[in-house]
Amino acid sequence: MEYVLLLAIVVVFLVFKDRPVMVLEFKDGELIKSKGQVPTGFQKSCQEIAHKEPFSGRIKVYKTRFATKFDFSKTIPNKVKQRIKNVFPHNTPTSKRGKRA
Image (tube, rainbow, N blue to C red; front, side, top):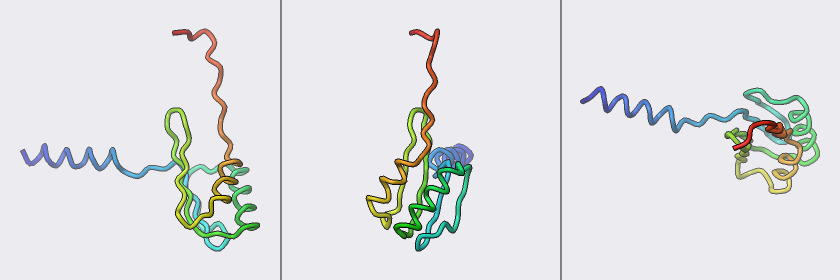
């Protein structure tokens, strides 16, 4: 019985663990930490945005099957959030030729 409870706790921990694809941390307009595979163009664009409008905070990017989700810390202004979303390189889906339902 104890093993089942322990196994359930481990499974819950693995399912609900925070797993972003990439993390960028800014402090006073400078990139201080990046984690994950950050595209170089996106990283440079974020640094330019932070240089023009200095802010501090963390940006996490999550990838689901069909979409990309951004998680911004509360200290990042809305204008900056939108500019960062605009420069993110979304991959366009390829056409599904010959795969009809």
